[in-house]
Structure formats: structure tokens, C-alpha cells
Length: 128
Image (cartoon, rainbow, N blue to C red; front, side, top):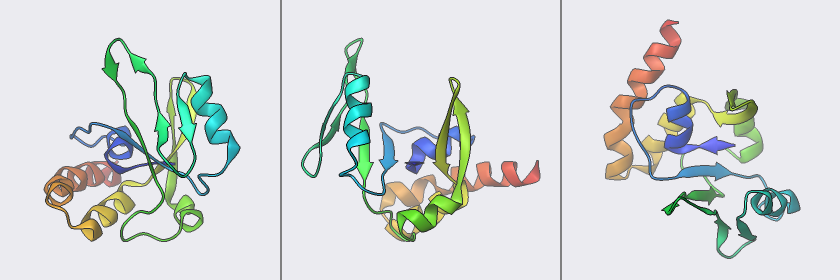
């Protein structure tokens, strides 16, 4: 499931991020390594995580998270996702209100600073 600001951007938030956060239920799932290999990356379970390929000299970054501050377990939060289609592929994305809850719970300066933009995007979504 895509979480963090990458997920917020897919839902219309006016912000930016340096990476895409991916939350897996089990990082030992061999399908993660298969997917990483398919795109030229490397997966080392339990150690270094996914090393994505370099594209045009720009190091795209995928971060694997195993816990989200202020949220329930992965399986519980999976109910709080929306499917968003990107280039013909449906992706599970954590709902914006749960991203906001996690940012608040984390309490880091950078997390708190982005909350107004996330709340603005949520207001636009709920007004539709």
C-alpha cells in the first residue's frame, strides 16, 4: 500500500516528497523481491530494503515502512485505502484522512508543517 506524502499527492495534495513510502504487511513476502527485480531493483529482506534502479542519473527512492505512527496494524488500515489508477495499474493508497492522522501522531516538524496542505486536499475531496 502506498502511504505518506506519495499517497497524498495521488489524492490531490499540493505538496511534494523526495520518496514513495510503501507499506507491506510482511516484508518477507517473496513477491516483493520479484517485483523489485522486475524493475531492475534489488530487495534484501530485513536488512537494506529495496534499492530501486537509477533512471537517467536520478536516483528514484522507494522507502519500505513497517509501521505507521498513530495507525492500526496493516491489515486493519488496508480497509482505509482507496484504489487509484496510475498508468493503467490500480494501486492501493492509504486514504488522506489516515495520512493526516499518522502525520499528527508522528509529531515531527516536517510532518506537522504539511498538515494544512493535506487538510486542504481532504476538504476538496469531501466537497466533491
